[in-house]
Image 1 (cartoon, helix red, strand yellow):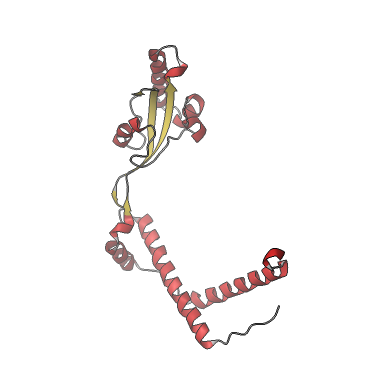
Image 2: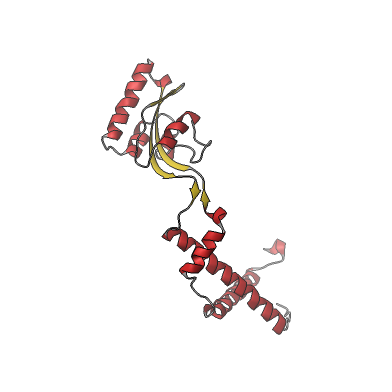
Length: 202
């Protein structure tokens, strides 16, 4: 603080002034705040479709069985198939991954790497993952390094988000925030016009 020409007292005064200013502005704007109606929310949504576009996204879990850890490919496949059967029978996939995965999923609490197209690792799993629905487990996938068992947890499909309650709430917050910022700017401008700025020595 000394190197910047400041002290604890100066910082405390700055924080006090900032808090007082925020309280003043908050109370001044309180009466002007209003809740956007459904028609206004719908109009915002209809006029800005680009804001509500979402890409394909998948949240998934992963168990990898590495060929290098087994005496023969068949032994590795049998291990992967046994884990697939346990998962398909209702066993906790995440727990199986944490216990038996021989790749990165173990360190990621059972979750796979990547959520969007061309981000999935390994890339060989893309086709399987995008074909699954939430809750589904794919067939055992063979790659040059081993066998993979995957389960899709969440899935978003590319397109425009539907006008559901979550989107309505998001839009209403945006409208309220924009209105508050506009009123804040108007209030500050008005204070600058009316007020006289005086500087006092600390």
